[in-house]
Length: 336
Image 1 (cartoon, rainbow, N blue to C red):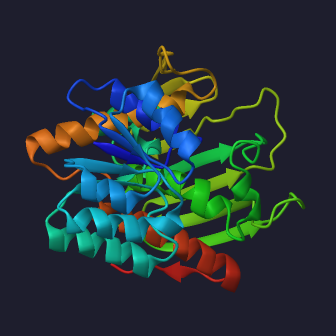
Image 2: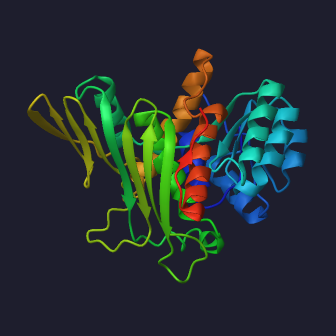
């Protein structure tokens, strides 16, 4: 495989690929030659490139992991698909729904596999909550609250985020909305309110959405980078899922509390710290490894990955509906 984009978060992609025995990193690419060379040296890639077209022309790849900004994704996917190279693309898939659809259609037409790097649903604590739900211990869920509220300075590591006119919904909310979809299923309607608290950034930094799902369930999805809390919970996603027989709660400190048929159990679901992970990032870093293992396992089984391009279009549609609702002040109905 090859990785395009050797920036801040891509280091987690590289560490994860290096941890999977079936995968060989043969090339890395970044417009910044120093970043590409550093990744090559650190992870044992054979070659480093500054031009993706040159890399595709020179290499014989099974797949490429695209970890660049969303504005570059379509052109890079078209290069890969033209050569029959399977594709993993960082979220958000593209700046517009039309471009997302084009990416999905391009890969389908070329017969290449496509997975969106939507890693939050692969966090160990969230996987644990989903497992309890799948076991039927609380019955059919009728309510979910998915919450990510923090005051962590994400702009120090990714300064470009401060200039984005659309920020928290497209950058973070897309993750939490995807987690909600994985738990409650598809949405029928969505109502969203956003807030702009930090005067030093261009976009919204708080968003609260109310969702009615197919089948009647209701969810509240709230995201904030303007919360002041001690201890700082970053980067934990908290959950409360209520069903006909009980409740699943993913609490601060990675505590999973389950109330089922009148009995309460609690367990620690904090992920282990690996040789290349560090707190508090370890929950996100390990989720990258879990997602990339899922890619390999799905490929081996000949199955579509859970976060396929087609699946991710539905999450992206929720993000666009949230912006539409916040701008219009009205409830948005989702397409069936």
